[in-house]
Amino acid sequence: MQGLKRKLVYVTLFELIAICMSSTLLALISTRDSFVYAGMAALASSAIALVWNLVYNSAFEYWEARQAKKGRGLLRRAAHALGFELGLVLLLVPLFAVLLGLSLWDAFVYDLGLMVFFMVYTFLFNLGFDHVFGLPASAMPAPTAEACQAAQH
Image (cartoon, rainbow, N blue to C red; front, side, top):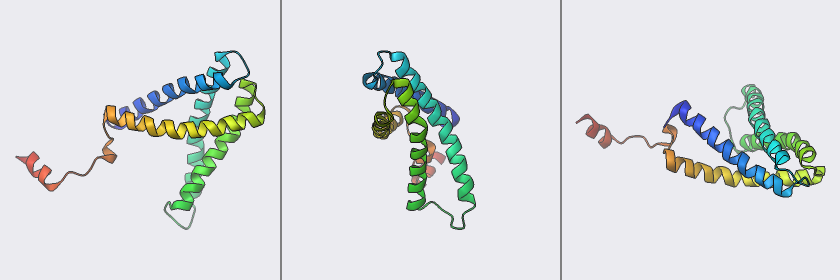
């Protein structure tokens, strides 16, 4: 599976599994007794992360296009990742505090844990997804001369 279909299946599965797992985790740490608030927090944080990703990357690329030095070295990549995560923290911490009945500090600590969770989850999800659906075309090795000759015969 390649192209847009692959991307749509990927993001749909990724988000559905993430929402289920994070809802459960949120419900366990929440001071409220309802999975409803945890589910709302998980859905809202997923939507916020998707929108923030589009907004942030558009703004970053706008800024990046105007820089004299082109390319994405280690420093620029680190600044990009840090800026994205800091913006997400600013957006999600108040949401978690309100919906889950947490203090801002507790919501911040939870958000840090969520970042670690998503790093591990993303790594494992990608391994599993590629195992089930195969590698994307961009990650496939270039065909060798022997393979091209064999395909012609």
